[in-house]
Structure formats: C-alpha cells, structure tokens
Image (cartoon, rainbow, N blue to C red):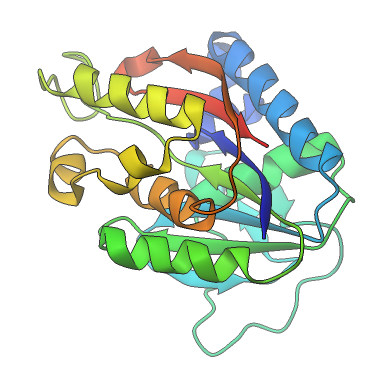
Amino acid sequence: MLVAAAVCPCPPLLVPDVAAGAAPELAAARDACADAVGVLAACRPDLLVVVGPADDPCVYRQGAVGSFAGFGVDLSVRLGPGEPAEPGERAPQELPPSLAVGAWLLERAGWADAPVEGLAVAEELAPRLCADAGEELAARAARVALLVMGDGSACRTLKAPGYLDERAASFDQVASAALGTADTRTLLGFDDRLACELKVAGRAPWQVLAGAARDAELAGRLLYEDAPYGVGYFVSVWS
C-alpha cells in the first residue's frame, strides 16, 4: 500500500556539480526536494521506488549506478546503498538521467531507511498502463513510498527547450494544483498527446503515482513551484 510519495523535478542541473555557476538558481528547488525526501523517511516505508521518465523502460535493483559524465561532470551515483546486482536480461548499464537525479537526492539525504528500487517509465506510455504500473507498485509491500521524478512543460518561454507554447502555462497550473492536493483523478485525466506536444517529461511518472495512490486517501502539499529556464518544476509531498 502506498503510504507516502514525493514529487521532484529531474533536470541534471539540480545537481550542483552539473549546474556549476548556475547552481544557486535552483537552490530553493534543491532544498524543497530535501524536505520532500525527509517526509518519505519519516513515513518508515518497507520499500522505496524511484520512478522517472526514460527512453527505455526498465526496472533497476538497489545498487544500480548512474553517471553525469554525459553532462560533462565526473560524478557517479548509486541507487541506494550496497553493491549493484547482476544486470538482468534487459538491464542497461546505467540509470537514465531522471533516476540518476533521484539517486543523487537519496545519497544527499543519506538514505538508509528502506530498500530502494528504480522504475524507468517510457514517456509515451499510455495513461491506463501508467495507472496499472502504479497499482502494481503499491501492492509490492505493506508500506510503499515513491520518489517520483518528472518536469512540467518545457515550453513556458521563448528561450525554453521547446520554445513558447501558449498552452504550457495553463497545463502546468493544472498539474501544480493536482500534485499539491493529491488529485489522482486530474492526473489520470491528462492527455498523453497534449503532454507530448508540450514536452511534459513528468506526465507518465505522475500517472504512475496516481495509479498507486488511487485508494490510498493521501493528502498533498506543494513545497515548490517555478519555471526557471522555461521549464515547469514542482516539488510536492503526499502522505
């Protein structure tokens, strides 16, 4: 059963070594993420699953390694404490960037409160399948917590990665309200095609969360909301 969740943005710029001189610009987001991870620890879960978007869907065991070398930084992270397990038949060598950022948040918090796994979700995964995946996660243990990584629209300004789309701000406004109030119905109702057009990396992970929380009766709280670099970033906790 899902007992807690934290929603965090997943840009590698959240990691100070990657952001370099721009690190102070995301300091407030970083602090909010730390508070959110603290809520997960306080709920004493039996299992923590980090969920994030990726090109290739995959399940990662505790100890899987991620790297920020692709962003010009010699920095590696590990998903939870311990040595990496033997890779499965479909397991790639490294965590995708979204899960690597999640692993970095856990390392920064000194996470040792529960076993950790990772779930990389294809960004184009249909909403119904996202919800089904969430329900399966919630049934994994008596007390399950999720760290859900994902960004809002990348089309908020002219200089945004996806340029300006007039629909982006209203989409993010609805997403922010839903994430801040644990509104599973609204999250599950997001149109996957519109989210793709608006370059919303968090749509599928948020719908996994909504599926996991459908019968959990959790309350939500928004800790952070902003759109630096023209991308919507949100931090919220459900407990």
